[in-house]
Image 1 (cartoon, rainbow, N blue to C red):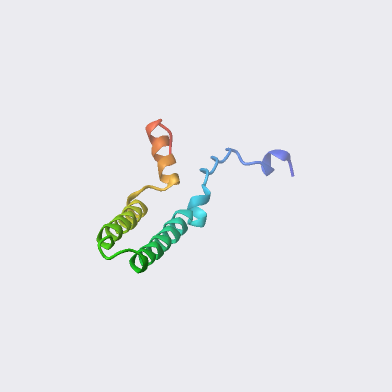
Image 2: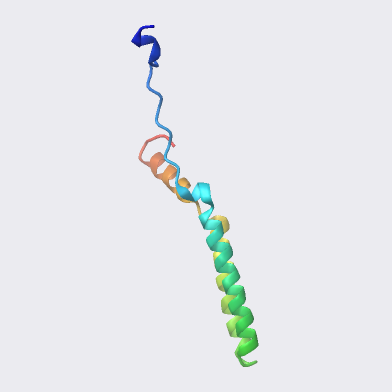
Length: 93
């Protein structure tokens, strides 16, 4: 066989770079671990704080949990951010 039959006529386009976040779910692991830690802080605060301080402490910790869950649900992944940057620069995603 000759060499020209062994090589493709057109070079294939390189595959887009994949980030570890999409493969390993780091964002989910971080949010779950941090949420668990905040719930444990809330439990600790309830057992140790004076009764008059509990509403302020509980509201603050629940607000942090809500913010983290909102960021988890709404925030784009790093791969999506890269795709948006490529589209803005005129490239293909």
